[in-house]
Amino acid sequence: MPVENALQLSRGLLGSLGTKFFLYHENRIPESAALVIASNHRSILDAPVLMAALNRPIRFACHHYMGQVPLMRDVVTGMGAFPLEDAQRRQQSFLRQGSTLLAQGQSVGVFPEGTQPMVSQTEARSLREFHRGFAHLALKFASRHPRQEVAILPVALVALEEQTYQPVPLRLLRMFDPSEPLFDRPGWHPMVVYKRLAVAVGHPYWIRQSDRHAYQGSQGKATVKRLTQQCHDDILDLLRQTR
Image 1 (cartoon, rainbow, N blue to C red):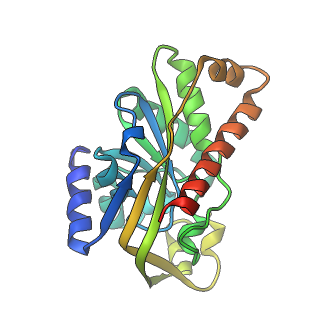
Image 2 (cartoon, rainbow, N blue to C red):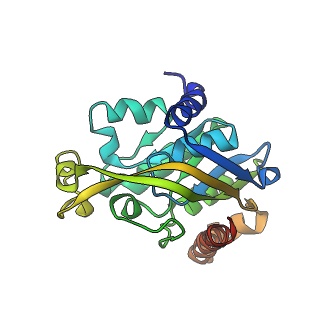
């Protein structure tokens, strides 16, 4: 299925569920750049909401098990997602696939909180610590393509009205990814379905020449850490401020 169809599928899915969103700060969305979109993550609807709100197909990195489950694999790939490899090769898989997509002019979406908020009951305005892969992706791609404009766009998804279901035992998912420790526990996988939500766009962080030099030099780790924390704090502020 062509990835361009993901935008139409997203709109159709949200319409069929009666999900309504309100977009804030649309003027902050870059019109032309290699774009890495980072957002908080609590619902299976997060990816389609972001595509519909930002009005573009987005290639989202998703958990390894989603590429192993029959039917779910077809759904996530049809929506433009790219499942990552198992835990031992996850980071390399993400950087390789993400860089290829950015080079093709596609937007890459990342949920830096990882799997934890998807398998646990979480508050709508809470935010966990971020993994740093998205910052590595933006900086690595920018370093290898010095003439290309590269930006990270933080976006907050703020649930205003939602329903939560518990359709799947967590341990059932171990059949598809035995390496994931979050699946080795009792309980059920929550499924949050939005009825109304706000989509608040933060200020894009443009990767500067100084960032490229720092990433390639002795300040690489510090640059990644700073960029990750800035994006986390921007999204947390948007979650707290948006009503």
